[in-house]
Amino acid sequence: MVIFSVYVVNKAGGLIYQYDNYVPRAEAEKTFSYPLDLVLKHHDEKVVVSFGQRDGIKVGHAVLSINGIDVMGKSTADGKDILEYLKDPSNYPVSIRFGRARLSSNEKLMLASMFHSLFAIGSQLSPEPGSSGIEMLETDVFKLHCFQTLTGIKFIVLADPRQASIDALLRKIYEIYADFALKNPFYSLEMPIRCELFDQNLKSALEIAEKAGNFGAGS
Image 1: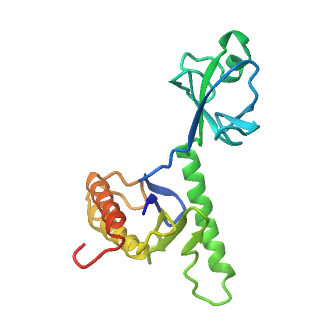
Image 2: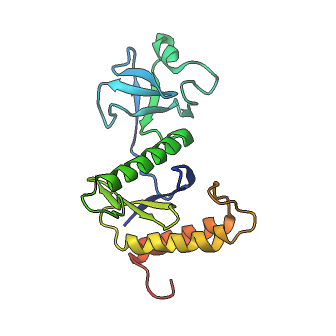
């Protein structure tokens, strides 16, 4: 089983911690001749496929490297605009690696804030008073699990749909937060968590959860 990532959101909706435990790498590399038979465009500081799918390359995939050299957003390693580079027939044949681009820090901050709002909406839509808000969202490839403390801190785990005992893991992460963040004299409430012991114990908890599927006594 797999646990993909962990998010901690403060009561104001700000992302104060995020850790990617496992990022699936769905990538495809192919050598192209001129003209390129895919339509590319700029999107959110990346170059992505807007039309055309082939050999594992899909709409929305971003250009990750050209001729084995990683690209920097919309530019090649030497600062040339990727779209302009690919318009020049003299640059062909060219090997391009495509894949799903990782979320940027700003995108993660925005998504955490959006989930905070959805959580509040879920509570307000409840036909009964005192709703706990959104505790789980399910897709075909992952489940999002959320545990909110009495003080409004949200612990969010994205995991494989078959992963067991996520509720116990969420409470274990809360315990780690209380022991290694809140008790750290240098940590300020509601601020980003930058505590090495918190990182270490969180990673250990995720490893145990993936291997055992649950937390027993004394974990």
